[in-house]
Figure (cartoon, one colour):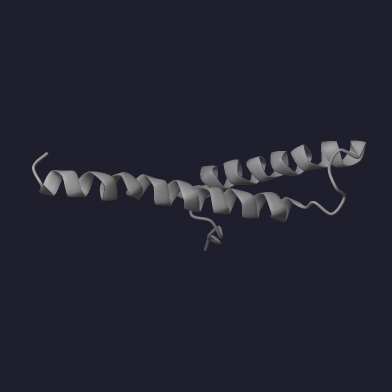
Length: 77
């Protein structure tokens, strides 16, 4: 009996890319920290939080055009 992977096979490439992106992000943070150009207390979780906030703004903006267009469509303009 085979042991199933914790990540489904179809999602494995996405998981690998996500891990590679995270490792790249950690390197991106560590380089300026090593030179003193970035505060030592800055952490990879800070960048994750910034990216999550940005994604929320993007998602809100995607739906915003519908609120702008809807009134003009209902009046026939």
